[in-house]
Image 1: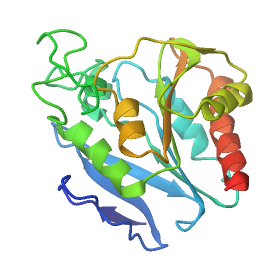
Image 2: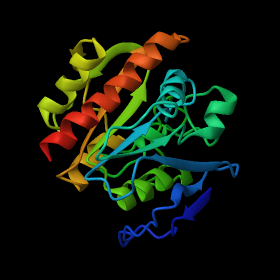
Image 3: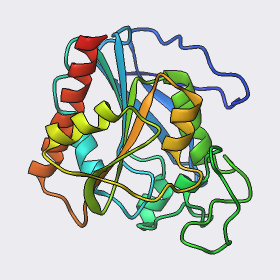
Image 4: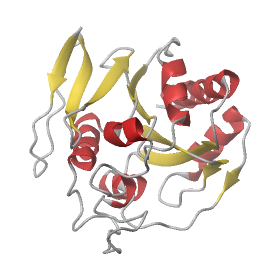
Length: 237
């Protein structure tokens, strides 16, 4: 299986030019050198491109099971599904929320970023995109320009009502997954806020899985919801 390595430059968006046989992209590395890799299912030239990210907080492992389930499923026609297990592989290894520098990667994106206390569980770093993991995620999103991006978190057990994303998208996901929607505070420097502002034709939202180790049935239900949402958007394209 061939791979594509993305340029480390972020100032200029990278042109999307992935050959059909390329099914993985190396977006970058963590602080400790672990690869952050996206894997594709479906045809690269599909009309609807979807990205699902299993984890950004290392102590929230539920999304990894959803990604595992997704990678074993058939993707609908007209959909290119890209999946990333974790954009915080060091944190996942240590089972900590932040990366190994103590930075909450989901407070390290440019939109709405603000200074926060060093040492806090939610410390967003000295400046936006200061961490290799958040830069890798931003680089990948710039490269793929997905129509929808689902970011999995824990432990609240609902789909987050995301003002910056199209309402019908995250509500549709909630119906497909058989779960409720609810609001959370509008946190600074999150991936979804940056993504929805930077790419107006893209809808990124958060799915909060239940706490603890989620069951195989729950993982499969959410995986099916991702594909169901992708199918719905593909037919509407």
